[in-house]
Length: 292
Image 1 (cartoon, one colour):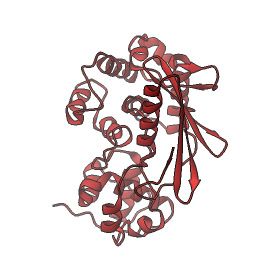
Image 2 (image 1 turned 90 degrees about the vertical axis):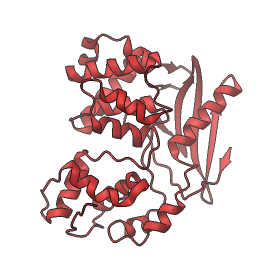
Image 3 (image 1 turned 120 degrees about the vertical axis):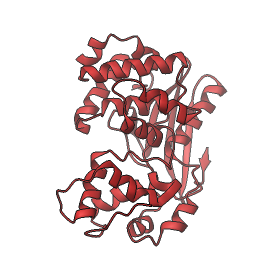
Image 4 (image 1 turned 120 degrees about the horizontal axis):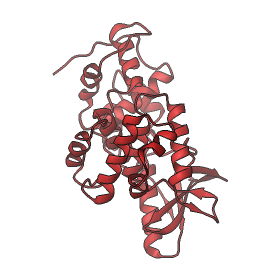
């Protein structure tokens, strides 16, 4: 299946957790529909197009795999309004013009984004990736013919003893939070795919799950461009420098939200451009943050 993206799209490489692997000109991933494995792949096809492929025993699994991979790549997202509105923005406009294919990195399933968010709380990303790889190796499902593994199902994590999760590198509080969240998702009491706001509220009622975790889920697992993980350290650093002009300054979460709220329903994507621009020295030395 070859698709012409609605808006410009440039695919990335494999993922740090090892679930998405570079194979030839594209990347591959193992997913499951129920107990049925489905191998999916995506690659650039020239002339701005993207080629998707899926292999499974049933048409239902093929369709499921393609749908989840399309969501993860954002190939169907129409970003025309964002580009037209903010191409001349004094803060991120230059980045928007230079990199019109930028998207927020997504997981194919919301549960995977929640799993990643909980493991990444308050630690360096390198340590979090080690934990994620251990959990995938212990609890993920494999496919002998592909050499790939799928992420652990909520039920698998829910049935794991907290001490086993701690042995993978999680702090004890996060191990309990992860297992509690997995139980709620596995039972259907929390539906991550519909009624997002209700799911966020239920998740935040779990000890150890705060706003950053829910915001991460919204952006990277539910495709919500109107949400932003404003408590992320990268945002605090970038906005701190913009507000004060001092390289080592740190903003607070309210200052980050105050800056990005100006982008309305696109604040999440604007945040991605803010970070991308900061890494490339495209931001002004200082900018005041104003509040409505």
